[in-house]
Length: 191
Image (cartoon, rainbow, N blue to C red; front, side, top):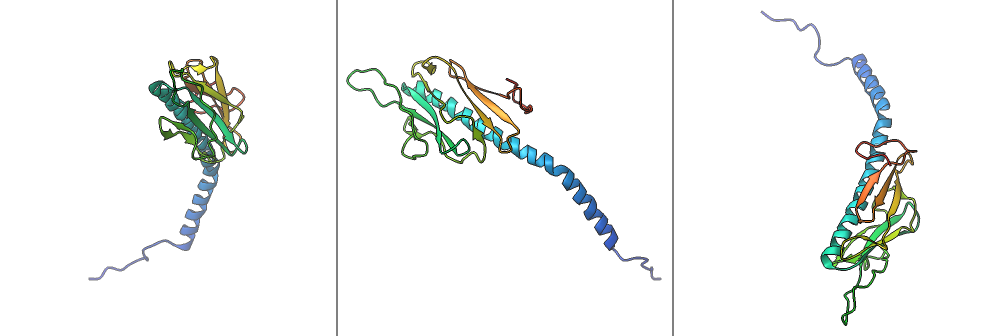
């Protein structure tokens, strides 16, 4: 006895077109949230790199007993770099001197403890910084900001929708916060 096949296995053209239409609608609805996610991701990545470098430079300053200077440079607020430079070795019994700012665009500069310490120009995508004039130093004895005070820089996402401010307190500790005029970002406190 033979069984009769009542239909062909597979999809009809209409079923395929309906599936593609539903998929297109779902992707269209999800696209803005993906763009927003990547915008925040780029900003958080840049800020995390900056905070990490500042913390590493502070630790290296105390470890090597050399004053360290941190400074921004670059052609514009969107083509920026950040570099740390340690003071040279003292000679003739003189105390440790101040560190000179480095030009992080120059690969021969920005050395702390014999290692290059810089975020290169354009490394952080289209994330912008509010000022390239931000510069501060760490004291070699306790890692305090030298001269005693505070420093900050505000970073803006590629779309301009989100900001994160990096604050360095008098003790040299870096923290992140979102300015009150910008949308909140998960995991970042409000300023």
